[in-house]
Length: 271
View 1: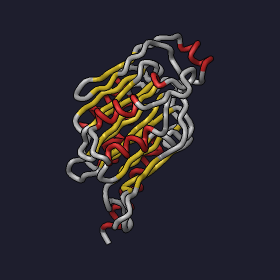
View 2 (view 1 turned 60 degrees about the vertical axis):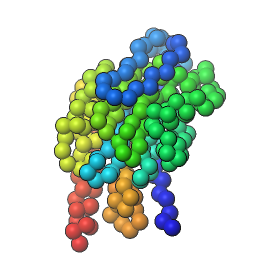
View 3 (view 1 turned 90 degrees about the vertical axis):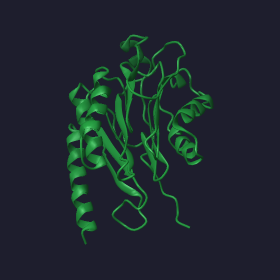
View 4 (view 1 turned 45 degrees about the vertical axis):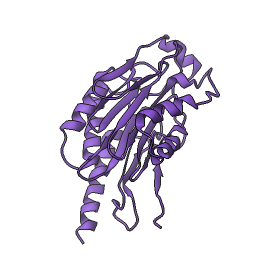
């Protein structure tokens, strides 16, 4: 029996807490969902130092590849946001993050649960162990299955501007952003770009940054793509797993690495 490969970029990602009323925003289909600010940013800074993140999940129906990419003004953002498994799907978890949402999402996808139901299930069983500084109401995460179906959630206390947009086989989500144009432009760039999934995900990050990106600037970026036996070695489901942990231009550096990986993939498969 072939061993299942679960791929993750794991660890801890910290963000601010904003105070507001309880409201869960789960969205499927076109358009975007946003969460208005409910507290002065200066007050939030005193509670917990905020960070900003925007990510993209995408599926290529022609190849069966599924994956995601992320950029943030935080060190080593890939170390916690992206989780993926071939023939199962991909999860992004961010904002006031509970990293366990990643493996939970993959487990429920593996069991055959639909993304929208997974979002509801994970939120319902979150014990919210640190509500003062790590509230469940600030969670932001997106779940995409191996067919590109996706559901995304942005909690009301995710740091403003926070929201998401869902398109065909794609979702973009972020917090502490310049505004809704960031996620809107990401989805549009993904849908308009041709070529390998890595290039489409990267184009989405570039479009999000061009729209203002996160308001704190840039520091790190990562990309993760999986497909059964899609890697360049035997029994390797990892098509691409790249991280830029600390850079003034993390998206530019990520593009350089993506282009190197593309040349390597073409060279090895050409043998």
